Image (cartoon, rainbow over all chains, first blue to last red; front, side, top):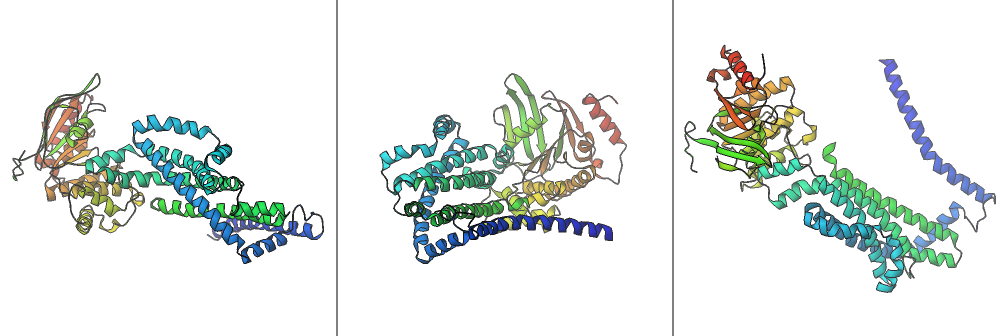
Length: 262
Length: 245
């Protein structure tokens, strides 16, 4: 017993050791970066010290510029996500449920999907100008495809035996939709949402280069004009954290949708 | 079709002269089956003999056929696999058996709990289906089939996927429930012992035709009274199924 007990304790210790090393690795890297900057090994006009980037960030938070920019960029992403998400999920559902929609809607969707949506920027500027509309529409376009494809395939993978059971039980279409289609498609649709979110932020970064006069993209572009590398890097970190944060929210929703599997 | 309340004379379900084709394949050839109220009829046959098709036609799942189909009310159906909705708790799953009724949520929950108690799972009403054992899940499936108190229960190899001991327990449970509620049963199986142990009558199906009918002595259902006929019944059925002993 004691040998077994000490063996599992040893395993646990080893696991914790690797956990600590994983945690320490980025911290050590940051420390080296800071040290290199302090010793003058890293030129500060190319890559400022972490402490300077932090200072720049604190300034942006204090004078309210970051909050303003986050609000503007956030609304662009949310609007694009809702618009593209509704279109993607609705089309995916229709195509998944109806052979008629599959024959008519799927081929053009597959052709459109082959177009790199970021390459449409010049066209979108000509069509929609340089205001908010082309940015939101570009995000919506990028977002709709992963949700469309995942919803479509999720609905196709619903166990047909459950539909047969529903027929025996006398379910209406709405009951089948709510009790079978939605819960059984949800996990894969959420995978699509995670892919869509990543594309949404990426698209936003590019779209915000279109003559932006507000938002995080404007913050970064403006900083370039004033050679504020620290602000640029801080802006990139904000983009990254937004991506990680929204992904974590969807992962929490995934865990909730799959809680019956525990 | 109006049904009398007398279990002995009423009909729970009936097919007369049913033919069915899948393309060129004649799956049911002039099949007539009658299940009286409170009667257990077993339908046995080899794989591909059409026995599941008979059950699907009776259940109303398979509509393209000739001949006449009569069922009392909405027949209940339990499959070989439990077919529960994994994302709904056990009580909700059983409550789905009352979909055709317009009962309030509270009444549905109450009747689901009672049906679960009937199958010995009164304490698992809040569990997720995936946390149940195979036998427990099949009990839930049985509770869902019986919660609406059907006149006719259709069973498609309901115990086929269970281990031998659980299967015996489930047979006893089915007979308990049957004695209490008195529904008619069509049991589709390829297990001769199961057919003889449970049924009043056994029909043998081969290539879509009913080729043999065997009336089983009622003493079959008393385990304390081992009848000498069991072996004879087994031999007769196996012979009809073309198994050389």
